[in-house]
Length: 205
Image (tube, rainbow, N blue to C red; front, top):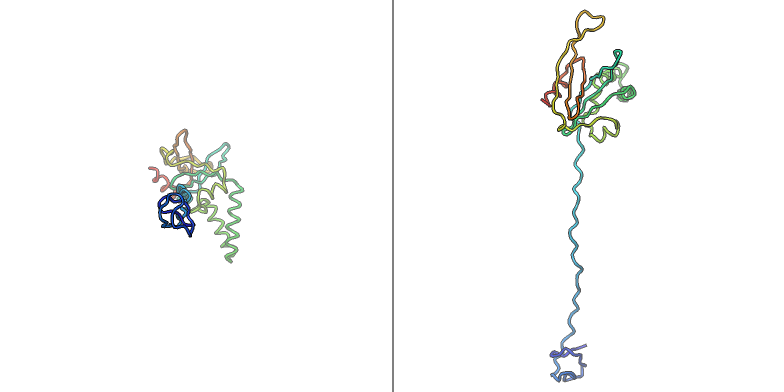
């Protein structure tokens, strides 16, 4: 419907003057309705994706902690770029690892000696199987592993001792590793000094 151009009152198509103010009709169309857009919402903050898991980059095997009556517990040391991980081995863990190595060798078509070599490799360097694992993968398999941030390690000592061995005419060389952390010391022994132990010690030196 047209409107008066002066007072905006409604007029008829046949009106020549506005019935309200008397102004000659110059009709204008009704104003176009304005669509009020809804208010803009504040931008949603996108949470950054979680960083890739810590990867194990150092593995060291063949550590022991002496117990009474000549017994000992076996340990391995693992490290990511953020944490040192200490794992106590159990017979079940070792047996399962040996079986996995044998089964893998068998699946590759290796005979008795190939399977035996795979078993020896696992026995002598048990920790190597965890190389390139993430910390989360390791803890899912070994929940009781001890995780120590590198920042908590204050000193790492490595020294050799001569120990009298029963039935031998010469002393046995024992390598002792002491890891000093806030609140205590973790001590381990090894009967050999391989390149991995040296590298581990040098990392903290």
